[in-house]
Image 1 (cartoon, rainbow, N blue to C red):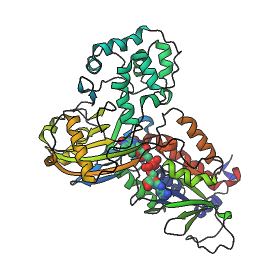
Image 2 (image 1 turned 90 degrees about the horizontal axis):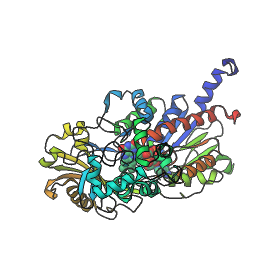
Image 3 (image 1 turned 90 degrees about the vertical axis):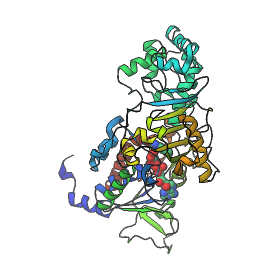
Image 4 (image 1 turned 120 degrees about the vertical axis):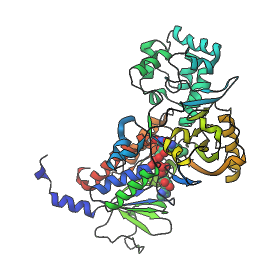
Length: 504
Ligand SMILES: Cc1cc2nc3c(=O)[nH]c(=O)nc-3n(C[C@H](O)[C@H](O)[C@H](O)COP(=O)(O)OP(=O)(O)OC[C@H]3O[C@@H](n4cnc5c(N)ncnc54)[C@H](O)[C@@H]3O)c2cc1C
């Protein structure tokens, strides 16, 4: 269509008159609000918490700026790096330290802790005879894993469950000692619940081609279809800088960011009685399609609403106005607690467990530990020798965090004991300089069996109301690299629905 088909002055006016409310200022809501504001559309972003950022939380602990939630992003797709570049933060992107070695696995029966073998996918080794694999599996485990190479592929390479695929091909030891620590530590899910087609696209087909699982893994890694270990980056000064930059940009573009404001409901404006005297805190020129009711305040009127909360509040807000969306999550996601510890310990200067530890499920109360000062040089530089930051993670699909119900001091004591065991270094209360406990509701991982279908039907239901959008990890999948591009795409859909309502 030619430019003349549009009245550009009219378009500009439409954008200026339009108003979009975004509920939830996690990374999804922030990115969506910025995309809306870029066109000059009025945007108000509200968040129930005291500060924006959602699962991205940076704060000072014992004077050190630390990430208490998300601490990195996957380079996959380049989406987050492009966003950081756009916000002038490209020079602040940092790579995790490799000097300390990679991650370890702890709680291996009869072995204790050992370096997590390198070069596999989701913990599945490409070569069962590699020294680092043998150290974790023992000879019997290695020979059992090798049977995979000589047994024919019976199921023409289409397993639905990662745990079943690995267990049947390479044995229980590969599943329990190598794969389960990764699925639990990284996805908060059991290996049995993970769909290999989503977690490792191409793996099932590679298994059929190669005739074995380890051969399929080797072929995929060689083809570079899957980066071994998955490349991640961080931000000098903490991921919170991304949140601050997004908020600043939204405000500069004329938008409004309001933390401490909880949305209670979204209603069609025409559902309100015409004589309803309740004021709307927005000088109205024309009637707007939606009313967003807020706790402790009246309401915001909007032409479109983007819901960017976690799954449970998102469903509660959208279910009454979207055909066929259930008000409750079909499968609630796991709760996670992260205990951040700043400790004094000369023994940790040597990074005895590399950048951190994943645990064999059931072997410890913590599921993972990150040795932050070994992983991120900028934190080590701030801390100085002998002072270390650790993140101890609790909670997974198997159960709530072991810190639930504990006071902050008791949670710190538990985390300190777990850190001592996982790092093989004695850390008692006298080593502790400061601690902080944060709790998060995670969404169901996108790679959980059946999740792709649940997400598809939720999106379809939400789109039954063309000026209602939804973004965030519960729809896009966990992680910044998933949420950012999805939020950009959804905001674009909503911008168009607002500016060109006639095209619906
Ligand atoms: C501990 C932890 C560590 C992680 N580490 C990484 C990592 O290193 N790298 C990575 O890529 N990903 C990581 N992730 C995942 C990643 O952080 C998330 O996938 C992503 O940040 C989710 O963003 P979101 O916008 O979907 O939602 P959230 O960040 O969950 O934000 C939702 C927001 O909605 C608000 N809200 C809820 N209800 C209402 C309401 N009624 N009214 C107003 N506001 C409301 C909440 O207060 C919250 O701020 C981690 C997640 C956790 C929990």
